[in-house]
Length: 616
Image (cartoon, rainbow, N blue to C red; front, side, top):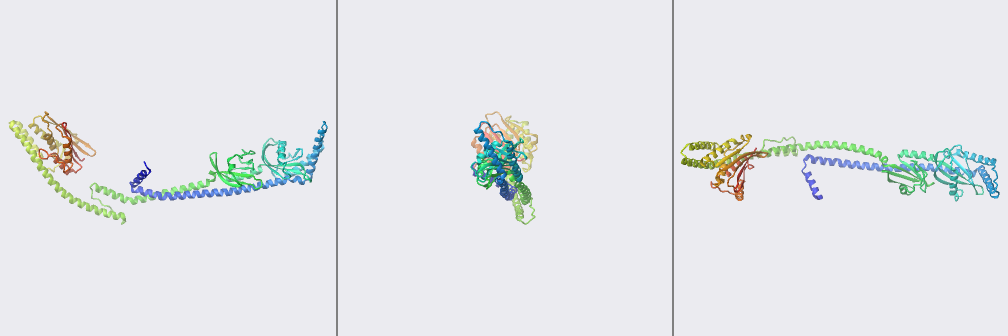
């Protein structure tokens, strides 16, 4: 089906709806569309406003947090420069370098190794570690400070615990990365290590060369900052945003991760890192089936990038509450408004429905109706006009009824004058022939039956009789004919008991039987069988009279049925002058209406069936 036809069908269906339905649809559209549109716009604007404010607020928090981290790292850098101003540290480093240089030289020149000078080593260690303890008290969180001489010998304090077990391995990495740094401090991203307390820890480190007055490197200092100094601030951020955060350096190494799953790993290949272009911004990305808002900013000092991801459900949580409240209020408003509209539409259309019922009563013939006019609006004016129209129609129908009654009486009298002489002529002829042939009791019986027939037919034609009376009259007629033609006609009746009392007009069955006998009798057959039956249908009562006579050809049958239907062109001429079926048909139509009457079916050589239709 094409879209145009489908649209036309929908439009036709809407046009066929009752007035209440049309008004309900109009009110529904007028109420729901604006409210739904306003609710959608409000929700969209509120969601967008929350997103924008969240981005601005979160970005500000990230920047403030990074400022604090930068300040902390700046303090670490300052701490790393303390050995440059502490002569004790530099002197001890020079002693350590001199001692180990001599030992190295001695081991090369002689095969015998010089024994260790424990007193000197203890002096150097105590001097440097004392200064380290002082440095540890300066800044909270710098929980581990390592000082190395040029030969990689490390000095550190174990008082606070958390010392790396892989100090040698860490020293090699730090020395390799600061070889070309001069005297500037270098910041190293978070590393994972095992402490001397056998616990896994994470720390980021500031490393700097220790230089003497002649700008010659004499050692190296490494300041470890426990990741907890960042964790406190990041936990506060995650608590406010209900999200997860991560800090990465320029190479994609993870400095801090809220889930602790990616600490000290490289995530440069992560798609969210690839999308975080520039120094600051935001974007949406779906991960594990959850849509998240990513907000990021970059430290101008360390170039570390901090990124927080907020689930879309958390972001729009307040907006969803507002949306649900709005929709509930909208639905309640719609229900109340629709209830009012339904009441209003029924109040508006109720007078029209009453007028439709009155019109239906008028259509069924009841003109004793009147529309009660309560108001002088359009419906009230229409009701006044309706009442006037009904009165006028009633007067016209009364006039027409009187005219038609007079006309029917004239036609009935004419028909009766046609039927009675014809019937009496045939009957008297039968008695005459019987008297000539049988000078006995048969003539008396025939005269008795004739009396019954005459008495029945000559009485008031307007009198209603029962189907049982008509069947008895028909039997008397067939019995009279059997005196004339002994055992020539056999009449069978199949009528239910409830149909015997059916009221009807007189003289409708006998003329049909007479027509069947005189126009359908087959001389080649010894007898003629006539069967009558009754049938009650939802639309009326059917009486069937069927014979096994000569029947009719299709052309004659067609002309007969058209004549019974009232066609002036189709005139069926009979040997008896045209009375019989046509007269009975006209009487039924005059008495009951044009919807009722006769219908004939026939087949040449097999017989004819006449169907009489009466109202229930």
